[in-house]
Image 1 (cartoon, rainbow, N blue to C red):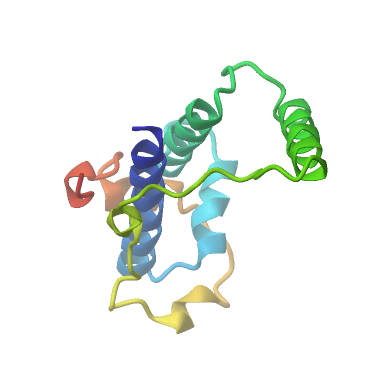
Image 2 (cartoon, one colour):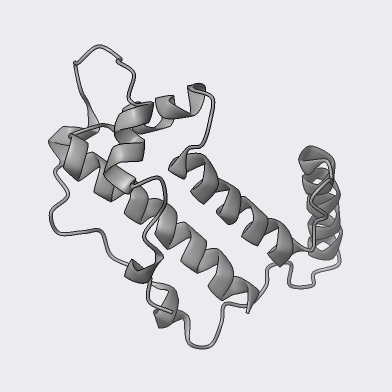
Length: 139
């Protein structure tokens, strides 16, 4: 199911965020700055899986121009709305299966850090072991 694939990929990304923030006391900004470094990166891989899942859910080819696709989709939705037809897909019947909660150990104070940026790419690799632990995702 495409919705389930997107949900699992999104949960994996959020879990990676939480794990790294808790273990390294990093902000989201710190985590995303690791993308500036070349080479393998668990965050890049996890985001790529989410992007692939979303593309598949929308039926978008992997080499399609994202902006052109979204413009066309927007036009199609606008045309349906103008014709007074429903333009949004209905949620899955059992949508509760796709609802997740934030980890109880989340500390809002870790969202901002005053530490200067350092090379955190290798630290991210060390925390995650170079990959995302997928057994934490129920499915």
